[in-house]
Length: 86
Image (cartoon, rainbow, N blue to C red; front, side, top):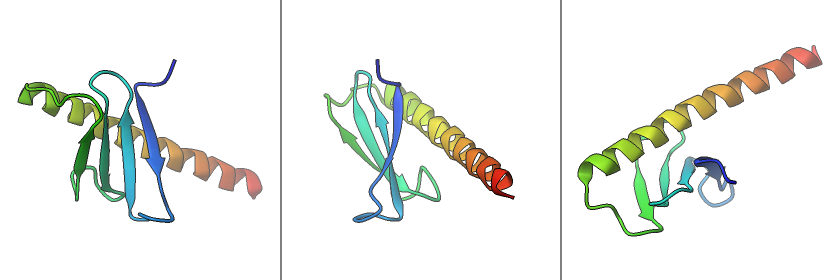
C-alpha cells in the first residue's frame, strides 16, 4: 500500500521545484517552489477535479502540512548524519 502523500523532485529539469503526490482518490500532483508550498503552485489532477472548493482546500492544506513535516524530517535526518560523521 502506498503512503497517502509522496515527496518528489526532478533536479535536472526543475531544480527549484518539488512535487507532492497525493496517491488516494482524487489523485493529484502539486508542483511548487522548494521554498514554499503556496509559491508558484500548479495542481495537476490525475482524477476528475473535485467540484467542492472546500474539499480542494482541505486536500491542499493536507499536502502543505505533509510537505512541511517531510522537509523538517529530512533536515533532522541530515543533521543526525552530519553528527555521526564528526
